[in-house]
Length: 332
Ligand code: SF4
Image (cartoon, rainbow, N blue to C red):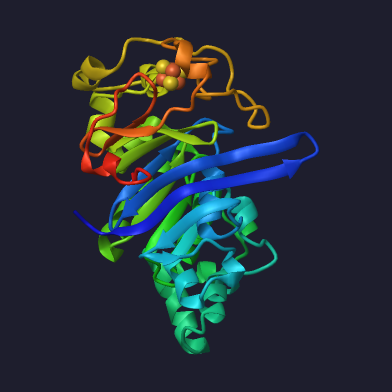
């Protein structure tokens, strides 16, 4: 087993608003192994992007702990050591807003190098050319501004910027969902190549389960600020346990007959995801769950390891006495 590059333990992020307290992320625990891709999947409003922003330091946690290679980094990015900031980068969903249109591509790609005092001005220019080559863009693009580029090209620049400081962990926040289908596969293949070449670890935030089948090492499902199920990708798709996971998997299109054979029977989605200001008591999914029983609205389930490496947050599953469950606080 590889070592853990990122550990998130009982993370909470609440926002106080005029409508009440938004429990965006509530007691979320997971880890990312070195070199793996953990897919963090959920509907809009599930809290997955808040997890990403808190891990990268754009939000400070309400409570809980975030560790990078064992070091506690549970604080805003401005209070983290520089070397550590270099090692964790993020690619946002919309390159149209994440790249400053008043700067040239050269200025955008040089900025992280300047911030981290990497090289002199000649070195930095060479590095810009190298980064553009890496993402398959011509060197003269350095003189353009982002609004002269197409959406796919802008996202390639955003990826080049994330790679500029040679990070170890990259948070990918829906990196292809704002792009044309024609360019999505190119970007995904590029990300997989960089992962291999640079030994990167990815936390891949998405609403697209089908994409995770091909890209992730493990998948974690989020619902209303909590993680419901975490499993290695093969197990996740062939033997899902949580009723919410089954509901999501039953509605995704599949191509291969062997995928169809293991896909859960169609489960119609009931109702809408409740507001995170007004989270239902007990299991937050009980208002939509077809397998709900008496205890579900009374008691919050605990995350349990139901088979090696496969964790479920649901009262339907008995406690299995694994070494992990015996530890205080289950680490996923
Ligand atoms: Fe459904 Fe109850 Fe399990 Fe929640 S705890 S997913 S309501 S069966």
